[in-house]
Amino acid sequence: MTPEEWEGARRDLAAALRAGYARLKASDSAVDAVEAAVVVMEDSPHFNAGHGAALNENGVHELDASIMDGESLEAGAISASRAIRNPIKAARALMKDGRAVYMTGPAADRFAEAKGLQVESQSYFTTQKRVDALRAMKRHAAAGTEATENEKHGTVGAVALDANGHLAAATSTGGYTNKPDGRVGDSPVIGAGTYARDGVCAVSGTGKGEFFIRYVVGHEVASRIAYLRQDIETATDTLINHDLAPHQIGAGLVAVDAQGVAVAPYNTPGMFRGWVTPEGKAFVATHEQVYEVEL
Image (cartoon, rainbow, N blue to C red):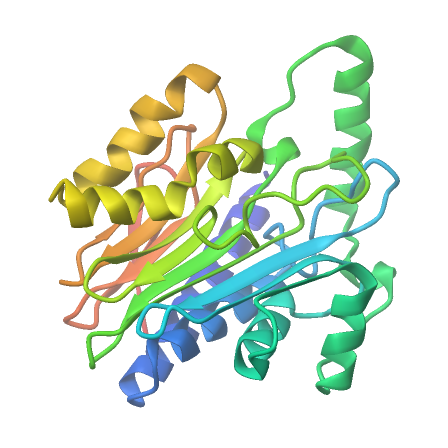
């Protein structure tokens, strides 16, 4: 990434924190906060979700997202969308609709449009960075070489604890570059890439989704906290840096517990992440360097 790309990503990550925190300060719910934060990142070209999403093997964008309310355990999930500008909004609309938790493909696009959500042509989601990444991945596949984590995949997500003690999580992604047509990863799978339960934790994951599904990562974190009485740092670190380590996949997550302790473990050279403390201080980070930002 160029210095300009690094700066742009940090700027948009800070904007996502501001958007989410503004909802919490206004006494809105944790669900409102995580949705607002993810929308900002979906609209940014610097992250693999919405505008700037990865391309599949046929050069097509297929978008996945989900959201979960820790108070009611209600959830909504969208997968393989080819047109929804902000898939997280569609996931929230599906949760509110109440007739289904999960909707996929053209039906998801039709649902979003019927709910008045903005839809776009495929060209809206495409950036030169993702076109270049697809070419690179096809070269790697042909040569049998290993791609960088940045070329492979990425996900955006948010977790929040509101003033009423309620938790929520939201996740959105374009999946991994050069993925099979129709492939769905963990991001829209409740309990895998997204999970929230009041009194325990909220989790949003990023990495090779097939393994997050197999390990049911979000629910596993919650189970270790609830049943083994592990603290959130131990539960998440064990999963990311021990349980998933033998598979040699890039993996990370963001999580917050019922006391407001936030963690963001990852096993790659870096991961974009940011958080707001209960005192109202905001920070963003890429590698080990942490930057304080204005709210």
